[in-house]
Image (cartoon, rainbow, N blue to C red; front, side, top):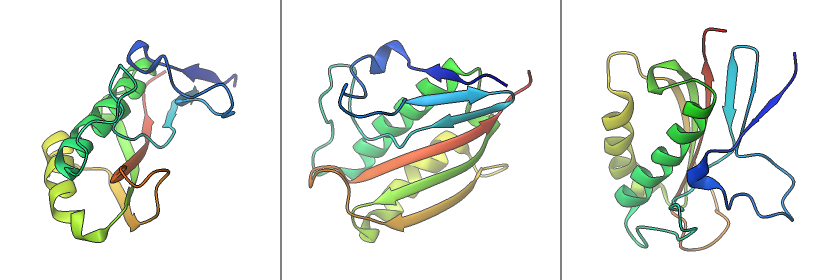
Amino acid sequence: MPKKVLKPATLSFFPSPEYPYSPGTKSGRLVYTAGQVAFNEKAELVGIGDVAAQTRQTLKNVLAILAEGGAGPDDVLKCNVYLSDMRYFSAMNAEFQAVFGDKTPPARTTVEARLATADMLVEIEAIASVDE
């Protein structure tokens, strides 16, 4: 099946030309996002020092890419969450639950990791399945 690149208008600046990857891809029923961080549509990192605000923006970016592939929160099978400090887990988790609920949330892995810059507190990627 051919691969379709997903690049929502709100992330038109992303990624920089020197980085050889797509914000998201779709092939068949599967939709994948690259790891997203808290950049807004002006390419500004929002929520400096505030993991809840960064998680909200990050999930907004993830959902925008999923929507380009015809998917929504209920279609997400798996998320990987990277936190710059595991002490941010509770705040991130509350925002994650606000988007995905608690009845049928996706599978998830959460790890502590060094992110691209010190101001980035959270990065999230997702895999979704949609009807063809």
